[in-house]
Image 1 (cartoon, rainbow, N blue to C red):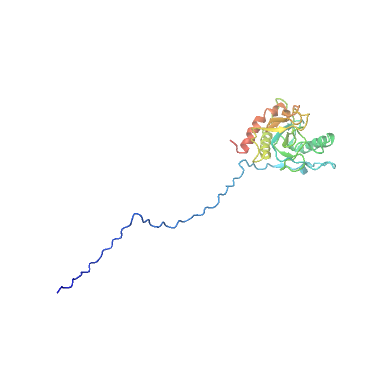
Image 2: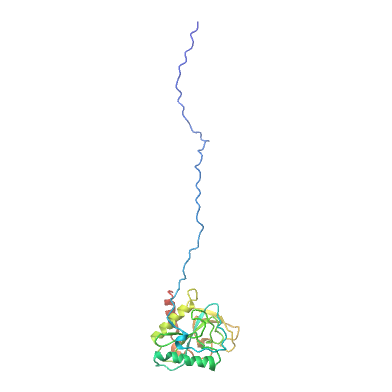
Length: 249
């Protein structure tokens, strides 16, 4: 008789071996949503504070009843420097009367309907609003035949023939006014600009492209001695000062 075969229960040690073909599932990817790129807003680099300007009503400007509305350019691209060719050595308190006299000569005597200059600057550095239309706007004046549009006409009150001293406050005020009127996005006061002549009586025939300094003397575009040799010689200094006021290097 055979004895029944005894089976001994042997515990099985199960070793989990990872097959090289089995790759653990990747962790779910986390998508990050980036905010859309926004262009950084940068303020204009050459912002200049508005200088103090004596308004027209303070020098008691008359008005020509038949004068047409003010005309405007898109922007100011250049500054034309003049002198009024009036006596020096004046008391600055008398300047409003001098401006009224100039107004009468321009508006009535020459039939320009208003004073020709956009601004006038006296020996004490006072800045006066000239032609009507808004001192902060690109008013088209009557100061530079052939190049009135897109320019600002600034007249130094006095006569600045060769050898005449140009008062320091006047130079400083003109430079600040130039820097402000060219605007934060305008050209470098030390550079040049291309303007198109609109009048054959200028130094450039009508339709001619003229390359002029951004801060130019009246004589550069018209056959005249204005702004006088002494003030003309100061134009490089005015350009440099205006650039510094704008914060340019």
